[in-house]
Image 1: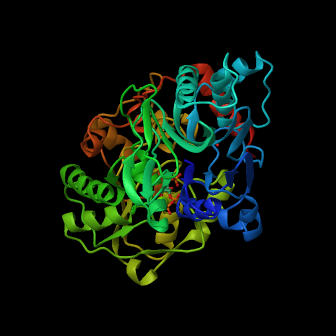
Image 2: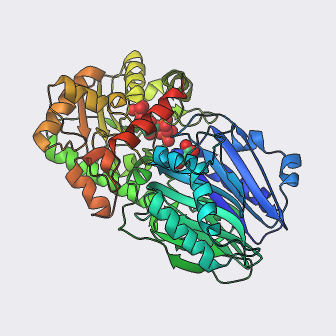
Length: 498
Ligand SMILES: O=P(O)(O)OC[C@H]1O[C@H](OP(=O)(O)OP(=O)(O)O)[C@H](O)[C@@H]1O
Ligand SMILES: NC(=O)CC[C@H](N)C(=O)O
Ligand SMILES: [Mg+2]
């Protein structure tokens, strides 16, 4: 999941964007970029690394202007080269743009551009979208000054061609004025919120960016809508193409910061609710299992562990301390990076663990790296029993919409179901409670756990009712991804890794 930010109407906007990007660094740790506009000049800079390593005072000074956008990247299409980092720039008309999500028909639209002799300089999926948008704005309509009407028409045509999950942010000149725009795909799969302070505006993936810069939270960009922002003017909104509302549920489970608001929900409250739902699940399906303490696996599961402890009446303890200088492991690019980072990241408190029956809480099991490491450590420190409860269902379907788990084969729950002889029917794998319990037993055995409890999809559904994309759990994909696009997403991603 990447992070996007756009700010208009402040002095040295790129400085503020750099600050906001640091607030959402957890959404992408591989590369970052900022683009700014001053008068008729666009400038941008992007590189591999964390925001504070890339942008120094000198670099930010060069990115002058009262409007700027920025991006933190976690590659899900293409590789991790400097060329693939965002944002991207188109000269005609001048637009600088970035996105969060995945363009699922990336390969098809590259061909569409090639047929018009338009070549790309990267493997990043937003580059062709930008060129399509530029083309559609200027099509049969070459002007010195473009209006909202021209840009909305261009976006409407672009939405007809581009499929997938995308939250866009961009800057261009409209009616001869600096204008920032933000748009979400027709299902609003990826988040985008906006805020206001005096005459200035901000758009970003999560509301924490607003907090660090003292902007007021104004709401979310609606699915399939575009909003234009100009300094000192009221925002102007248009519907481009709306199909429904299916925000990614994994944002609430893992991706977003707990202190953020997305889709007008407070993520912390949603995680507390997930902890309560998990406790209900545990009480219903795992009667007879006893434990001494509840231990969250830092960081993401901490709010849910609090409510799980409250609901089960068992004390919560810090069994692991997270090294404050290590980032997220799941979003690291290779299996080797993830495994060695886990050793550095989590260290146990022996006094809390020795001779205890421990109930671990985590948000998800994806590849199983974290559980494997945690069990090894706890056994080494003399835990009497190790139980694990996960506040999401088994991840058994790939994500094609911007989370780096786009193949079945990397998903541990899928692999174990296959070993159990379960027959798959495309991506639509649904687990009833009987099969869920069998899978839990098998995985517990594999990891050396005394018990494993997942949240059932039925209970997860209580979190957001029908308004969500939970395809990684239930196989219900809002945007159809054909076989060719699937292969492209996977191939582009894996061929760029070691
Ligand atoms: O089964 P796996 O493939 O290991 O993936 C799942 C784990 O990865 C994430 O943690 P991460 O370390 O990325 O971030 P966190 O500090 O926010 O928990 C997530 O919170 C799980 O703990
Ligand atoms: N996770 C994301 O949102 C990544 C955005 C885009 N697909 C890229 O790889 O740059
Ligand atoms: Mg974690």
